[in-house]
Length: 403
Figure 1 (spheres, rainbow, N blue to C red):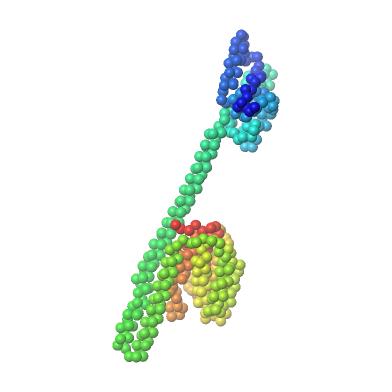
Figure 2: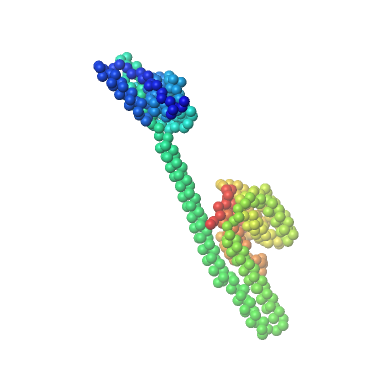
């Protein structure tokens, strides 16, 4: 029979005679037994050395004791293990010294089911005449429901905290994206009103001149118009690439930068012979197509500014530090004045004249936009006549794309 089905015999509670007096002893004993058995708490009597002497009926049911005789005399102190053992021993020693004590902790039932208890221990009769400790009464209240509710509340609070952190981070990224977008829109508006109008003015001016010019001048004017139109077309295409780079969130996947660079070396070296010095490159999290565009732009930039060098060299390196990969592309080309490094990643900002090194001035701005949306940063350093280094960072953790 189980504890819930059986009616265990009334436990033999060891009570010293001084607790009762006169003819009322039996009545008091019966009364205490009734209270003892009717209580919903688990009430036990233990000896000064921790031996289990008695347990009330409801306590036996709570502890899933089928037959109290099997655990009578057992070491009650041994029931408590783990984090609960130390506070239990401290409370037990205090009760042995004649004072009430209290602790809470985990102790499974006799059948191994988890239970949490709120326990009060007190001396039953006080010490004997010789000062030795007497029996102790132990009242254990089952607080499993309350403990589980507190634990659920703690987990809920932790989940809410994590969600608040996640939403806060998402809002921070969204705000950063909006700030970057506003800056980019301002740059585009400025470029539209200045940079894009310059080739248009050239075309209009030389078209007017060509109407009244002789054949030789007309041909030269038409050449200028043609080059201006090509330049304008390149700038418009650059704006479109720049716009596309920020239109869609990165399609995050595992990207092998070394494999991408090997393909680019074959593609770019066919245009500009160069000596490559490539170290081991990492596998990162990001958008493969966009990161290939980044490496292509930086390597093409390095080749463009080393084209007049007989010993043109391009060095590609990667280093991991402080939770980011740092990837750099270094060349031995014409370099630039470091005072103007902050302009390099802006739309249509150029440090060399169009006739010297053609280009729309949009590639590096697009690189910056892609890397921003991957959670990284761009940077550049250089010395005039001695080459330049262009680099970017990527977080080692997966990218959280802006929403």
